[in-house]
Image 1 (cartoon, rainbow, N blue to C red):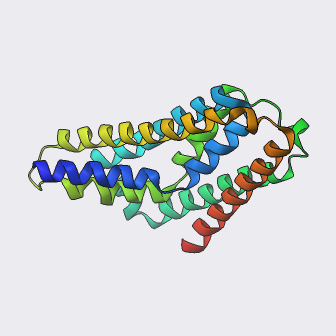
Image 2 (image 1 turned 180 degrees about the horizontal axis):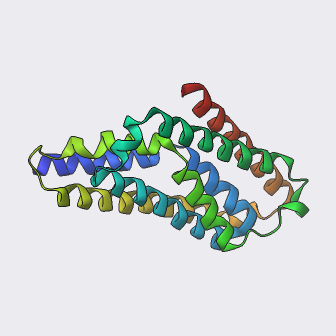
Length: 199
């Protein structure tokens, strides 16, 4: 890889991480429900999911998913169900009393599931990483890029979490928690519908 390719990769990775999406909505929801502990667990879960798809792309495994219409559509349907399910659960929570404290394990599972069930992430990994590698480069270069992508994504979400931590006291207020839970619910349902429509 050339120096310009490395710079381009770093800029692209940070830019992509900054785009609000499923991860941001889930992180907000877990922060509201369980505070910093659940939010950190959510970040860890999301990044394990990113790592799975990134390594699958680096090793050429996710190409099989992209090539198989049945596998892709099956994963897409699973992703739609997961996102809308999380969203509806958030929307149906009856006030702050029902929101409770989300255990760390719950945050990890939520973060992991939303990323593993995201076929767009798999397709993105397949198309994103190879752009920065010469055709004759070894497989290890893609693996290193996959690891770097996970690190950059993690850094961004930790920055978001740091910001949320600064306003955690406000997030714990019953009315604020309820409103934010509804907002994250609408966002998750909307993302699920978008995934269903875009196919």
